[in-house]
Structures are given as C-alpha cells and as structure tokens.
Image (cartoon, rainbow, N blue to C red):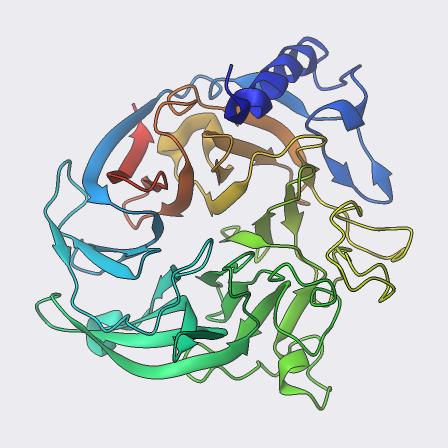
Length: 411
C-alpha cells in the first residue's frame, strides 16, 4: 500500500467501529478521525462508507486542465476554472465533454511556486451586467515575491479574454516558496466577500492581527474595504478591521450553510488534525507555531487548537486526528433530490483522494460522516467543490496532468 493511502486505511477501519457502535465509538478519539465541539473532545460521530442510500452519478465535464483550483458559474451556463499555473479556462457548458477555451488574460505577474499561483475565484453576483469576477493570486515583481492579492477582472463578451479592473486587496503575506498561500474567496448570503488565507508557514502570522495571513477576512466585494459590522472594526489598523477570524493555519475551503448564515471552513493541519471549523466572529482558532512569540522557527508540533495557551480558542467541529487527508474545497448540497444528503457539507481531500460528506445538526455539530465510494482513490487528488445553480456538485482534480472538472448528481 502506498503512503498516500494510509489515511484511507485508518479512516475505513474506524468507519466500521463507529457504525457498529451507532455513533458511540469505543476507539479513543485521538487514534482516529474525531469531532471536537465545546470545551472538550466528544465521541466521534457515526461514519459510513456510502451515502445513506443516495447513489451518485459522476460525469466528466472537461479534461486537459492543470491543477484546477476553483470554479465559477456564469449566468449563461458557462463555467470559469482557475488553474494554479496561471491559466483560466472557460467551459462551454455543464454537459459531458464540453468545449474548453483558454481565456486570454495577463497573468505574467503571477508567482507560480509550490502551493502558490492562480487560486480562488468568485463570480460577482451582478456579472450579467458587470462581467466581473475576482481571483486570488500570488504576485511577483522583478521575479521577486511581493504579496498575495485579490484581483478583479472583466470578462469579454465572447469569453475569450479578460482585462484587469482593479487590485481589490493587496498585502496578504506571501512565502516565496508558495507554501501555505491559502486562498479561497466565497460570497456570503449578505453579499460580504469572505476570504480564507494561509499563514505562509511563518511562525507569528496567524496570531498577529496586523497581518492578513492565517485568517478569514470579511470585506466589501467592490472596494476591498472592511465591513462596518466586522468584529475588529474599532481598530485603527485597516488590516485588523478586515479580520473575521484568526489563528488559522491554511484555510482551503469556505462554505456558507444555506438559510443559516453559518460559515464553515476546511483547513490543513500539519501531519495531524485537518479541521472543519464553524466560524464565530472575532474567534481565535488557536494555531500558534511561535508558541506565544517565544519561537521564531515554524514549530509544527504544536496543537492545531492550542487551548492551553488560548483557553477561549474555538475548537474544531471535526478533525482527522493523528492523520491528515489534506482537505480542501468545501460546499453544501441543497435540494430534495439529494435525499439524506440534502444539507450535507461536502469537503474534498487532496492527499486522501476522496470526498467527505458531513451531516450537521442545527447548531452545526457533525452527527455523521459519509464516504461516497464513487470517489475513493478513483480520480486522484481533489481540490475544489462548488455547488452550481443547477444543484449539482462540481469537483476539480489536482494531479497536475490532464486534470478534470467533474459534475456530481444523485444517480
């Protein structure tokens, strides 16, 4: 068995135990995937291989991509897909084997290194009239890393080119190696732009509220300015004013739970404890490799949620325990067609090469985890998951060669 499958083996072993115990697993929480809510870890939720009776149909919409990072939906049924090497693709439709057109845009200033490059994407709600979308990308000048920034673009009428409109927000920290770049933008129900960022593998960044890394930001989609009801709006520092939550390691997914306003994130752990978090405005999520400023090196042995140093740190709703799946994009399923999966939170996994589906109670606690067998180890590394206007789930692969855009519906 190859190393990349280790997480799957542990996960499936635990799944049998959890299901047999009807949710009250006898295996210690620290030895397998676990959920942590409130002041102390709870018993792990029931885990099932399958989807509770809802079988899935997976169709290939497009191929020939390279590290498809994010997906945006246009009003006419076309889709935009960002690719980490600094390329943008226009997919003609959501039907199998749709035509793929390269969008001509000047990405020459994108620093493509490691985890960095052209990353997250949101299509503006007024796209039908403005033609605008915003990307998150690493930026270089004179072959030197400068920052990570949000850039707003305008797509031409024929979809074959895009022109830069503005730098929406600059100054997010960057690691020249590209490590822990983040960077997932999502539009909330109230129109706010939420942006999950990475800590750039720099020890002090996550706990420093004067820096934008290791955070979830909440800003105006058109100006990049902080919103007036942000938790730190009374600060004199515009960076701190933009912060919604802090103390994160590397946020890869941001999803808004329909009808509730709840915001969930998917976050990379080091070699343990990938996290699914429920955001609380102003919350500290407890990642601090600087150990309270006593370390300048990036000490990854610390807890993902250090409640010893930060007693009020917000605990994760779910973690992978002593393994890592490298979870990435996140989205919610909606519609009666999904059966028991209606309302489930879907999270993709890179290293784990799977899709995980979480059933939640009204408070946002995880009650059950499904593992759809249609994905296990079949499509390789999975990066983005987005729910389309048609109610289908769209997933990108991230293997680096001949990557695909997939459409998932109930069979």
